[in-house]
Length: 338
Image 1 (cartoon, one colour):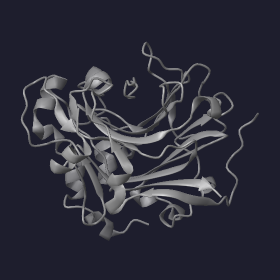
Image 2: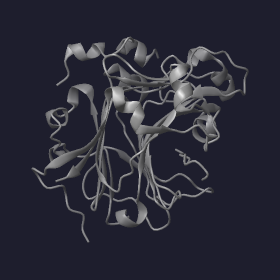
Image 3: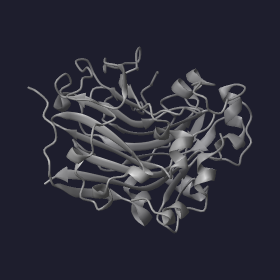
Image 4: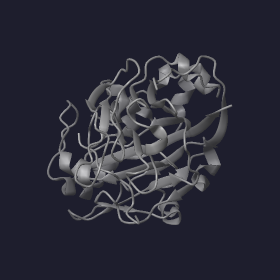
C-alpha cells in the first residue's frame, strides 16, 4: 500500500516532478491453438532486480546518433554521471535526466541518456516501478524492449508518449505475419491491429490508455506507479497500476498476475506467434527530443494539457522546458516461472 513516507523519495517534491500544467517510429540503433489465461497461484522466481547502488552498472549507455533523428546528444556512462544526468540518490532512487540548465540555439541538440540492459530475455514477467517519468514540450520518453535486427525480433513499447500528452500508448512492432488480438477484455482502446513495421510504415499495433494517470504530469502527481508486462507463449499482456493501486503481491515480490484483473493491453499469440516475432530483448529506457514522433506531433497532442509554443527546435533550446524531463526509478524486476 502507498504510505505517506514514500512521498519523500527524492530531493524534488511530487508536485515539482509533476509540473504545472499515433504514430510511433522505431528507435533501434542502425548498426544497426486458443490463448489460455494465466493459471491462478502460479509461482514466479526473481531472475534479476535492477535497483539502488548497482543499477547503473547493469545497463549499457548508448552514445551514438539518435536512430529517431531527435535533437539529442546521448551521453556515455562516464559523461552522464559527470554531468549529473545519471545518478543514484541516497534513498536508492535512480535518476536519468535531460540537461535542464544549458541555453542552446534553436536546432542544437541537448544532452540526454539512453540505457539498455546488459542481459537479454526471451520472455518473463517484467515489473517496472517509477516514482516519476519525463514530460514536457519536445520530450519523447520511452520504456520499451527491443530485439536485434529490427523489426524481425520485435519491439514492445510499454510506456511512451510525447510533449504534454496525458495518455500512455502500448505498441508492438514486428515483421510480417503478426496482428493484434485479445483473449479477453482489456481496459485500453485499440488503435490498430497491424503490427508489421518498416521504414515506410512504423505505426505498429497499439492500445491507448484512457486514464490520464497513465502518463506524464498526472502519472507523476500520483507518485508514479508500476508498469508490468507478461511475455509468454500465450502472448503479451500489460498492466498499469497507480501508486495507491499497486498490488501487495508486487510489493512483497510474490507476483500473481492472474489476480490483477483485466490488462490495459493484450497481444494474443493466436494471431501473432511469440516465438517467431520476439527474441532476445533488452530493456531500454531513454528520453529523446523532437525527432520522428515528438517533432511530427508538435505542439500536440491536444489533450487539455499545457500548450507548447513555437517550433519543436525552439523548445529544445529553452532549458525551462526540461524541469520535469527526468526518470525517477525505484526498481525494475524480472521474474521467470518456477
